[in-house]
Length: 187
Image (cartoon, rainbow, N blue to C red; front, side, top):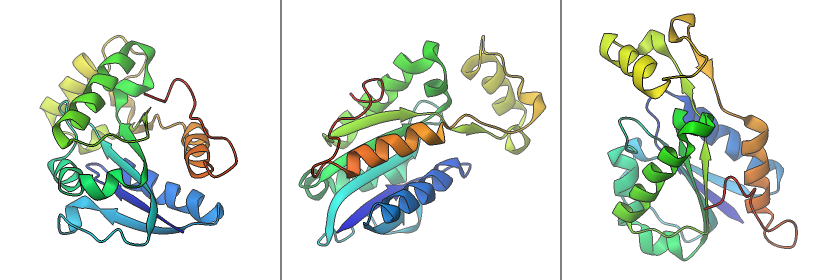
């Protein structure tokens, strides 16, 4: 049984998460097909795929175009399989930002036409050393406004790897084991 893990990444955190999800799936007895939507044609064969995990970061209130194009162009095939969509972003790291993070995910689902079996919000990371002045200012005064984190301190990973593992294992274990996602992560 094969799990497709399709992702887009901007700064590398979502790619790191996709590789991690692949290893969790392999440890659970699945084969995996890992696809970066920035590096492939818009259509891919899903003949051997039984489950799909999609993940992409939110930047400037949207998920990457390559990811949305991949999901939209493959929506019929994707919806014939059990699917889980992760939206990765800093807003998901803080209770005060989760509603806005949910809005970004819901808007992406509307734009692409996909209706996954499950969705989850997961926090990403910041890498201020890769940002220009404008990006650092937006990060500090908009994205992280009111949070106890100073981007001048350098890179910080907000991803909760235990939460990510639990969500993936529950999704993959639908065939007889636990069959519901954590309530705070499920749409």
